[in-house]
Length: 128
Image (cartoon, rainbow, N blue to C red; front, side, top):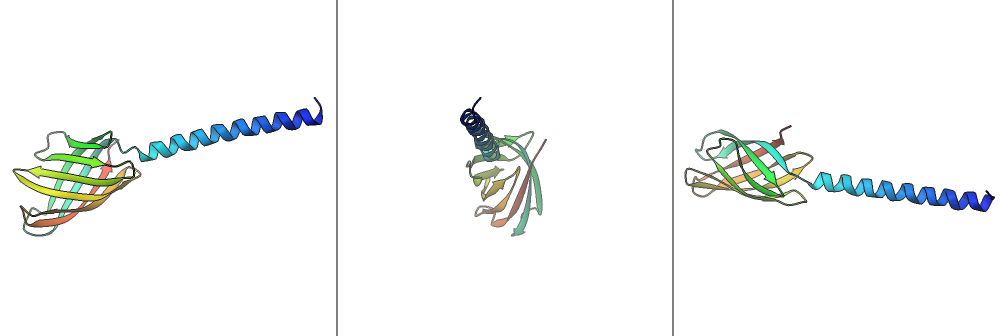
């Protein structure tokens, strides 16, 4: 092969490697944005006379949130691909609005309920 042939071959190999690297990076980025899974949620009351702590499981599928397991609470809402949380928890007719952020298999934020006159914080961790 001539020197020019080597440089063309090397350029083609480098371009192929760069394409594979870019595709891998894009796939890894998409995986980081996927929040699907089962999460253990720890809810803490910071204001009002609600129970101090609650613990539930939620399921996230395609960004949609639902209750998981034998929860006495119904969860509904969504987590955007960017991790923005917009949920409602309902338990015994009482509703709490939940906001926050998910990233890297965990989330946190705040909640409030006008029906229960309570508010607090929450943390969630992906199980498994």
